Each structure stands twice: as structure tokens, then as C-alpha cells.
Amino acid sequence: AKTAQKGPPISPEAVEVVEANKELINNMPGIPAKVVGQLLVLTVEQTKHPGGPVVTPTQLLNAFTTMVEPKDAKETFERKVMSSVREKVERLNNAKKVFPQIKGPLTDLHTKVEGDTAKLYAWFQSLLPPEVQPKFSQDIFCAHVMHTTPGSPAIPLQHFLNGIESNMDETDTAEKIIAAVELHMA
Image (tube, rainbow, N blue to C red):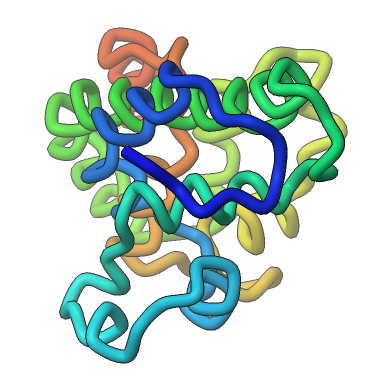
């Protein structure tokens, strides 16, 4: 794919990563539509898609090139931008594979605790490494993972499911998450 570049040269591998994963990248949660529109220079037609804006690989690559200085070498672009894109794609691919296996148990947990924020937070904390747990408050959990107001007594089911799915990483497994669910269901 040929791009109208403003930044450093883009490797064929970078183009290939974006092209091969455009469906996943187009469905990335958490980026406000207005920001996406400005960054990607969307047409009005692109913003009318029911699931959110759909962008072209060229638009993505052009937006990515704005994240580094035009004088930077191709290696800088690869290190600063494409490594993050690859990591996000790995996370999304893992979530796509694992989430269908854990959705039922997560729904059961949410139902059992009636969406209670403190109980869902305790479950989430059990998944975190011990050194991270003290730094990850319930307010951070609500605001950044569940996208709910800090201090909310309950988390709606869809917020819970979406929050877990969009925050999974490449190391998350169905076995690990289901084991934590079972521990908190007892």
C-alpha cells in the first residue's frame, strides 16, 4: 500500500502488520471518536458506520507517522510506533481467542456478587501480580478498566465484560481467569 507520508519511511513489514490486522485495529476500544476523526482525517461517510468509524490502512499508517519526527529513521518509527501496534494486536488476538471461553464464568461471577464493585475489584486484584496490587486502587479499577464512575456501588454487567475483554493481555489464559472466578464464587 502506498501512503502519502509526512514522517519517516515505513517498512513493508509495518504496512503488512496494519493490513493483516485492520479488522482488529478498526475495532479497538477506548479511543474517543472525536480523537480518531481528527487523527485519521476521516470522511463524513466513514463516521456513519454503526460500530464506529472504519479506517483504511493508509489512514492508520499516516496517523502513525505523525507520532515521530519526519527526520527520524525508519528504525525509530519501528521502535516507537510499530512495536506498540504489534503488542496491541497480540493482546487483541489473545482476547479474541480467550474471551469466548471466559464470558460465561465472568457473567456467573457478576450475577453472584450482584455487580458489587468491591467484590469484582477483589476478584480483579487476585489476577494482578502482588507488587502491582497496592498501586491499583478501586478507583483506578472503576475509571480505567470498567469505565464507570469511581465510587459506584455496582458495575453494570456489560461494563464488566467489556472492561475485562479490552484489558486482557497476551499472557491471560482461560484457565487462569476461570480459576480466579471459581475462587471468588466459593
